[in-house]
Length: 114
Length: 112
View: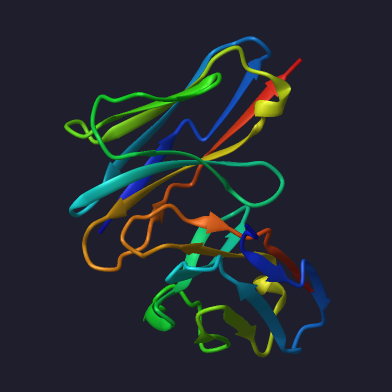
């Protein structure tokens, strides 16, 4: 079975540009999570969806960040405009349900904003 | 607020040593505690514990949960350099659709 798929794997962009990260969860999983990881702050939950509906976006840093899940097999995380402090590894994870179930992580997107 | 605290933050040991990593938690309506290993890429799942006192084991790794004292330990025996990683602990709640809450991790370095 394919795991969680993320693209791109690496992204280098200039400050002010729009960045779109993509995620395909494991088939049959109803919950999808976006995380950001940095050395300073560790793994932070940004937003999660259950059955394509955003449940909690309190971790989204500010209005420059937005996430969508138009269907059960695809989600995007967009940063517009990007800033150097957004540089991090962004992980997408999925689970069968949101209630404490095992989450399986994608390989991550390493973002560098110059 | 749900909370997960891991200790130590980092640890350096020699090959062959045994290590114990700690995870304490506070969570509303506990459901599960999970351990992940993260090397240079994404966290990979190790164990899920839901019942107190039952040891989960996989090779040289084992973990146990104490629901009364609200903690778990992850043991690694006969450590190898390939065990070097960040080990993350996370807890899950039965309360609605709440996601896992992760600790900051323990960075383990095993030197030859």
